[in-house]
Length: 304
Image (cartoon, rainbow, N blue to C red; front, side):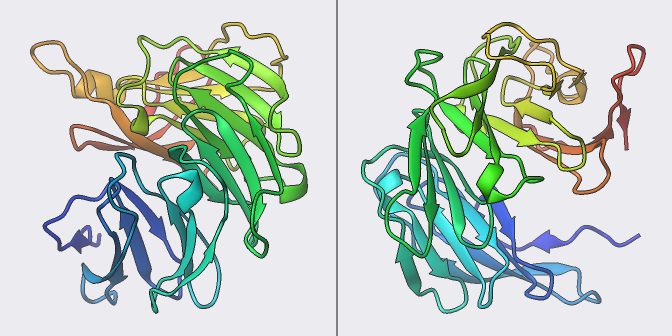
């Protein structure tokens, strides 16, 4: 088995985006003021990832830089920390080719591409926008926070199995509220849930919601301590009430608990793109888990 590839750098990285296979680049980001770092994946006979270049970010804001990529030639990355500072940059030339043109200094929590031209933006205060990178400004805009559901921070994810024209957005608050909305009307929740969380997510930049790419209507949540919760949204309605999780992965909280009783926080998780019940999760103690799950009552999950 090939050994893990090593990233040679003295700097910490918090988020990463991989470019399409043939380009062999990785871009990592972190708190605002830290540049985006571009890494070159070496050939198969050299198990190393080396720093290639840096891309400037906006300095002076106490927020985190968010990123998103899409298959394009030449490779490009969308990045920003606030609504009014979202830029599209060519990675290899470092040329900034587009600014989204949204107003306001709302801190970002989520950036994503629905297709090569359509961008989804979620701000920490619940403001959400859809935009076309070929045109300035927002194509549509709304807010999941304006209905008084939660005054806490929000993040969101767009269902990858549906096209940009009929996408469903899952929004998660730091207090455990979940809203599903149609991307064409971002302010009108279609389905809602109150998830059972031990305490509000802190720090809020670890808040994370994901759609399962190979399971219809399944979402997963993390950022509330050392667990990852999985839910089936098929039977949800617009009533904000507590919903039961299909499965809860407790591996990080059990294996990483300290003698003082504190547990690590899950910092990120992601679904395998085609193995429908395989999930990867990482925690603040440096642990990385790859696990399968089942909704059978006696099943506790299988660590791979």
